[in-house]
Image (cartoon, rainbow, N blue to C red):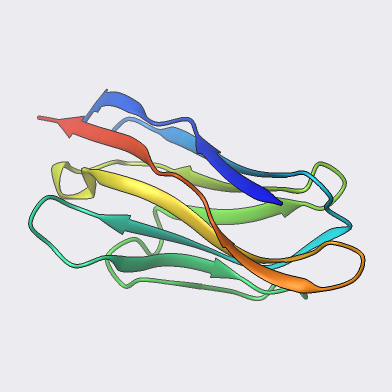
Length: 118
């Protein structure tokens, strides 16, 4: 079971990006999923989380600009990022609980780089 984040890139301030985090392998379902980010020289921080029941919570710095959502059929979680700011520049990664049909396991995917230029 693996998670793969994608969708990063270089954008200008005010623009948007949508990140995807897809689970692959022996995946029956995805449960609680979290997006994190880590900027150079900084600690990893939680950006957004979505529960199995679709409850969401966000870092204060992204509230009103970012939206986390999920497509259970595609076993994918998304992070829609609008009105991007230079301070959003970071490597974004996803982490989540995956049910493989027998066990629920925690997986962390490789990151995808988001660079926001002014």
